[in-house]
Picture (cartoon, rainbow, N blue to C red):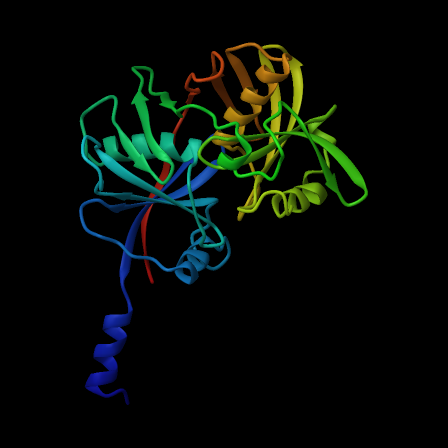
Length: 290
């Protein structure tokens, strides 16, 4: 029979966590309100929550918090399924906007949000879609970060016995984008993990496989660091479009077709922000003991 002290310890150790399950073109998230009251989750807990058999299941966990800098409405933190915190997530940013409106945390159509890589400005459109100003892409190797002697439009990347031509772009998180003839048969499962952990990307990287359909339309698959291939990747879509425009094979705006749905990406050249527009939907609400 448990002693009163044991019962008290069990009570202290357990906490009921309320969450919202959301998705943006198939990229799925658990969103937690840490704005109204602080929430602290360690990597092991996030991994358990991410398990699609024994937990909730998600590509990323999004934590809404009070801002830490003036002139900003919210702070936005992103954790991959492996428990690691990352800098940015485009599809997550759209879900973030839908969440704070649905929870009546703001009534503003456009907000300023603090992320680990700077301020983003998402806007809820009248048609229900969300547009996110993702800021300027970072193209200098040391800002991505990527090991290279100088900035270039494309780089040769040796992976095993292959030499791949990639573009390296940061949208607040690092991306390596390559062209493929057929995105459906691209070696995402085999090449993705090798590119993700390539030594020239010291913080690992998201690997994008892009098929150009026309100057205003691409198809894209992304192997995300810490999560594996996802149905969609918003920052990956932005990085792919920036890559294609810099290569001279795409023209803004570009429709990006992923396995989970479509985004519209606009970029008007260096020193200009990337604009991403797409849907964000709530799937269900729930709570779980952790």
